[in-house]
Length: 93
Image 1 (cartoon, rainbow, N blue to C red):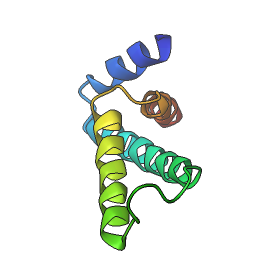
Image 2 (tube, rainbow, N blue to C red):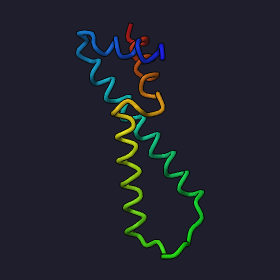
Image 3 (cartoon, helix red, strand yellow):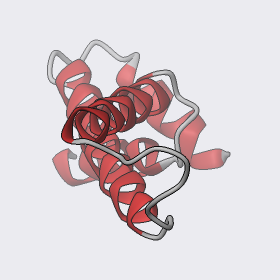
């Protein structure tokens, strides 16, 4: 919780680079979450009532990407973006 407040307070400063750092950190978290979802889907057994075609696989990949993007950019992700923002702000000082 402390890292979030520090990272958010540094983003709200008048630093012109801060919004780009926040966006890059959130994009990285979204990419990371997409990879996690992709690996989690590999553990599910194939088969079921209907055979999964390429269209369904593509739809599930797009769903994973959208969920990851929403989680990372709405602040309810895993907290990786806040940690990255804090670290990047510290390295700039």
